[in-house]
Length: 70
Image (cartoon, rainbow, N blue to C red; front, side):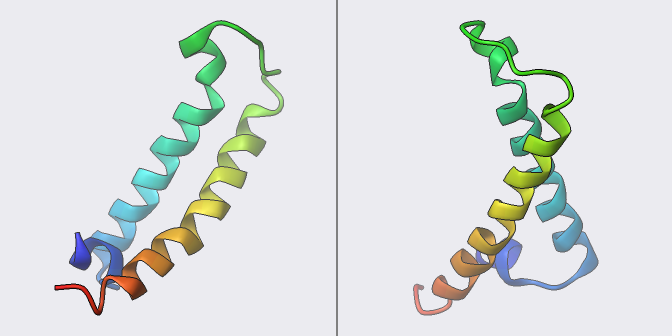
């Protein structure tokens, strides 16, 4: 996990981007999963982008803090 969050190798950067995208899509489609409310189709790409923008610095901070933990 430490290498996944901290490494700048291409494969780890790609994996982090994919994980962020998957989480964003799941959150954007939570209305289909739960069925209690409806999110307009026009807002779903915006939600994915916002989730990815929020997750990127969070993952960066997690990688920095895991440096001292062994």
